Amino acid sequence: MAGTAGTPGTPRVLRAMNDRAALDLLLEHGPLSRTRIGKLTGLSKPTASQLLARLEAAGLVLATGTTEGRPGPNAQLYEVDPRAGYAAGLDVTPERIVAAVADITGRTVGSYALPTPGRRPAQPVVRQVTDALDGAVKAAGLTRSDVHRLVIGTPGAFDPNTGRLRYASHLPGWHSPELLGELAAALPMPVEYENDVNLAAVAEQRLGAARGHEDFVLLWSEGGLGAALVLGGRLHRGWTGGAGEVGFLPVPGTPLVRQVTKANSGGYQELAGSQAVPRLARELGVPDIPSGPYAEVAATLVERATAHDDGPHRQLLETYATRLATGLASLVSVLDPELVVLSGASLTAGGDTLRTLVQDELEELAAARPRLVVGEVREHPVLRGALESALAATRDEVFDTSR
Image: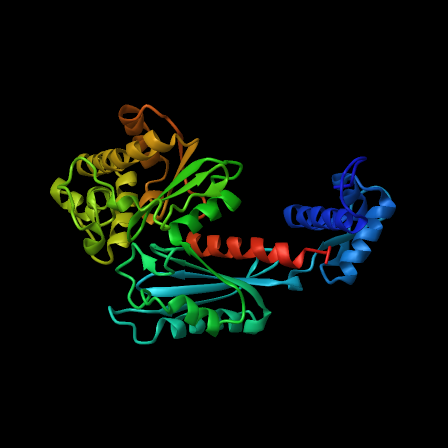
């Protein structure tokens, strides 16, 4: 915004601050006129005109149409030039890698899915990553060199102390101590690595149910059960990157699991993970249990149960809600978050019906009583979070006009 008396900084720095404020407004609101930008930033018309001319010359904004249907002459509209920069994200699971490229406005311009079945990868991980990225880049009509930054989301987390992937023994090929160096050598852009559930939380904080919230927990259930912790507006990752690996949490209702990293499971995963839902459904006599991957079967069963009010289906939902609340009670007792977001296919399939049941159970089991909401980012939330994370850093780089 416009500088005020006593604001430290050179004219160049103040101009850069005004430039960034205008660019952020254009990203938020879409095309705006010079007059509207001036009002929103507090800048005079001449200063707003100079700002737009400067940004247009720098290739950051472009003129796009005019205002119509209003009294007075039509005004020129401006928007962020989507070609000013590109960022990429990867969502890695044992079964596939999904890659996408977004332009600076956040619009996805290319995507690609690379199947990676089997316990032993048919190709080295570096080749898998570059093939997936190249597929998305090609679909966008770009080249690798056009991408400013890449964020890769995986189960588990890369330990910042050792550079090795932890808490994800089920991800074949990703545990070499040389992997990060090999990826850095193979890719021409900065690469960051983040836990997949953390990225789902980034997506919800930027675009979904956690917008405007500084303290929240995201509980995730698809192939595995995990959580993301956002405290004071920042992701809490822990000393080894393992904060939120709640699948390993010991809970009442299951035998005590030992050697959890070797088993790649723990009490909460066994009690309330997606693999527990079809077992529970069989015990309760739910008919027509489908076959397939646990996450898909669990989501189907939970969705069906919300559409039926008969005994077995209702009992499935109620028992599942109690199991989910059992682990959540430990989390909210320690963290006292403002909000809990239920995300991942096994949880979002239950919608408000499951959310209400879990909320009621949690209020019986924990002293802290955060509000529960269902995640709103349903389509590739991990990938969307990776793109949002990569875009934030790309915008900081591309939009810096003080250099």
